[in-house]
Amino acid sequence: MKFFIDTANIEEIKKAVAWGLVDGATTNPSLIAKEGRDFKQVVLEICGLVNGPVSAEVISAEAEQMVVEAKDLAAWHENVIIKAPCTIEGLKAVKKLESLGIKTNVTLVFSANQVLCAAKAGASYISPFVGRLDDAGEDGLKMIEESMRIIKNYGYKSEIIVASIRSPLTVSKAAELGAHVATIPFKIMEQLVKHPLTDVGIK
Ligand code: G3P
Image (tube, rainbow, N blue to C red):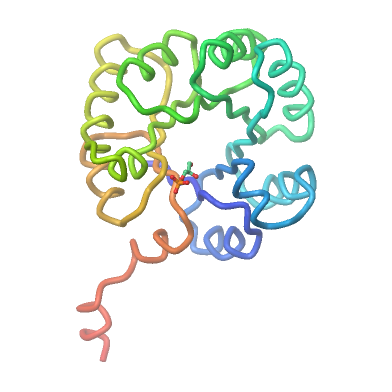
């Protein structure tokens, strides 16, 4: 399973990269806004630290504009991949971008049918939001199970990124289901390694 780090905080990324656990990074406009820094500068710094895909999200609502935005973002650094929402316009943009060789990550995915449509559009990555589904009283991990079955049934090239992770248990459960990637907040990545009995044993 690949681990992406789900943050735009440079210090967190530096630490997690040093642990040898980071295969990529995901940002979104809210995560970048939280840092209060320039979008391009943050993305470029992350690309300099992480040896793998770094998701940067488009904010336009229409496909044509998304493509214009995405071409600009993709030109910043070879590690940049384009995050676009799972809407009709988003999937139109994804199809166009993938045909141009620009990799995409379809985000804000909350149903198995959205996974199917994003896979058909040719997305390199698809991000079902487990935590937000759980928050809404649904079963986020069940959607990961369904997603993996759909991808395998048809041999789609898309990789499933388990997103909106709230607990370490989600990561191991998603790994059991064979999800390709988990994008993990810093605090939870730290928790993955720890166990109180390990500390007791050391003492
Ligand atoms: O990768 C998507 C993630 O950042 C969303 O997480 O906690 O806002 O649902 P959350």
